[in-house]
Image 1: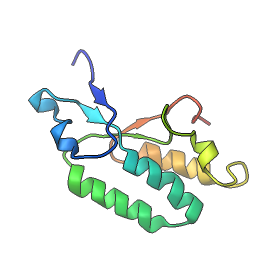
Image 2: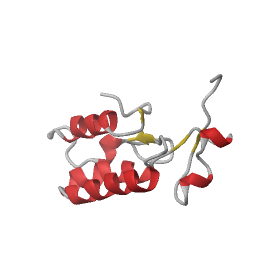
Image 3: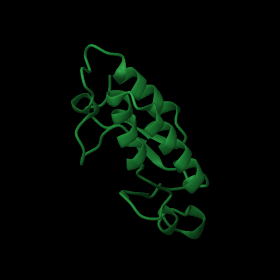
Length: 112
């Protein structure tokens, strides 16, 4: 394609907006995964991350969503993680971002 159409979607049915074959957006932002990545690491609540990952697959398995750790509307991941300098949380969050289903997007300020 000549371009990729990406939409910033916070909630709602992504199928109404993301459908490349129908001439709609190619992808949308995955805020659910973003929140689960930092809060599961901070709280050691990995059930949240597992639930969000399974929910994403169930609801949006046919879509390719854009995953991120932080963006222009949210604080950077280093500000959200507790003790970012003294723990392996940032590398774990970055690895999860890069290895999750979808398109990883690394915003300025979230790089190593």
